[in-house]
Image (tube, rainbow, N blue to C red; front, side, top):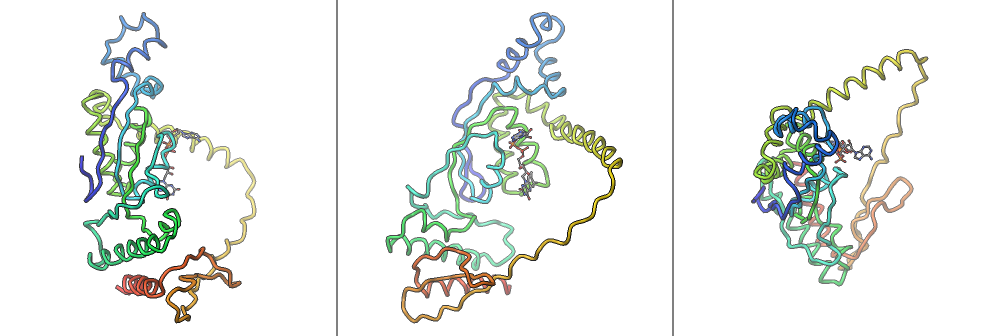
Length: 283
Ligand SMILES: Cc1cc2nc3c(=O)[nH]c(=O)nc-3n(C[C@H](O)[C@H](O)[C@H](O)COP(=O)(O)OP(=O)(O)OC[C@H]3O[C@@H](n4cnc5c(N)ncnc54)[C@H](O)[C@@H]3O)c2cc1C
């Protein structure tokens, strides 16, 4: 299923379905419950009461191609298992994401991305190892990941990443995931849509907060610590050497120490890079 301009999501396989959830739940509540509740009622009860463990017996495996900044948000979800394409062993395919809503003119954005790629390719041509050359590539480059997750945690992911507060790009992947699993767990998705899991969690969190605030009120006021230090002002060393290869873009801190590690790149490329950056900032 295509997502964004060059991304996709594919459901590779799955283990279990709604019958799996029901049979796992009946182990815990015993055979007697069968007479009391139909499968549909039991599923609703489990979902609405937050009895999550039976949902964890259903697993899904996806292949995803997404911009790195999307995958970075995704990987905060610790309950997924991930395997990502290695940029140490593989050269970037050069695909980058162009947002429709880009506020700077698209040509400046494209030039900026292409320049990053040029520096990357140049570095590779000069024999710089792939894992070092990639440091110049922006967060909008696409990467590929295989991920496995159980249904309970997939629902939690959907509740957070389909929400309007989530970034539009990851919202699209979340919606596609839901679309792909709906034929396998249709009633669960319906329950999720009716009563969002996040509402249940929110209610739970509100109760905890209320309890904590009562406890805090009984504490004595403490002195407030001083305001935090300002982050160090970064400067850029000018590129003075006339030689083709220079020590490169080298931001320095107040004590003259380099903040980034340096690698041998062409002075012209670096200066082009800075010009593009400046024109983006001026715009
Ligand atoms: C709109 C939005 C904005 C965000 N902005 C920021 C931001 O600015 N900066 C930032 O750092 N993050 C940000 N995040 C990430 C966010 O703080 C969470 O890290 C992320 O959404 C994963 O949530 P989770 O821990 O519930 O998910 P998972 O890691 O998938 O965990 C799922 C559930 O498993 C349980 N669990 C997993 N691991 C543990 C553990 N170690 N201990 C206890 N329980 C665990 C919890 O019940 C958890 O809800 C943002 C998220 C969203 C949706």
